[in-house]
Amino acid sequence: MQSPSAVFRQLAARFTLLTVSSLAWAAPSQAVDPVGEIKPNKNISIPVPSDPKAQYYLVELKRNKANNAVITTRRNGPSGTSYAKREVDCDYMQFRYLADGDSWEEFKASKVEQDMAALTDESISWYVANFSCTHGPWPK
Image (cartoon, rainbow, N blue to C red; front, side, top):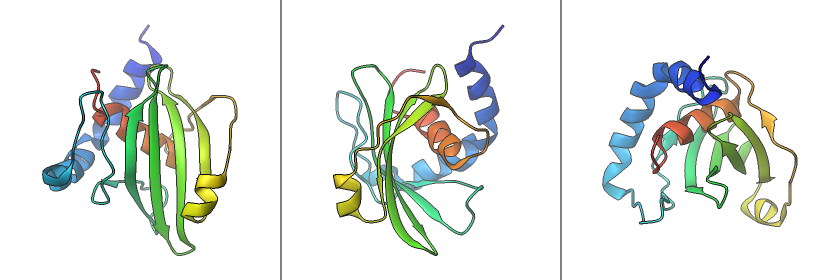
């Protein structure tokens, strides 16, 4: 039996071309530091087909002390701009929101802490997690 992360990575393979082309476009301005962080970069787009009227952008991608991905995203859509920070356990494909808000100020002031939950296939968080876990600056 395969681990949850192996199954997820197989499912995520169909999105590799799309996400790799996004990274290739933004690579010249992307900076990765020695501890495994992608520095803020407004040019890295995260494809989210389940929300076709919005664009998602990587604000920050790093790993925490538990070696989980911590992803901050910006969403530009018909309702305006919003921000979210998610923690993702790439091995078990679970996540939780750490912060969210409809403005940068609201985002910075929020304290959304909840238990980790399984990702729902093809949800917004699933696409964000897929991007982060397959293209993050750490060994697979």
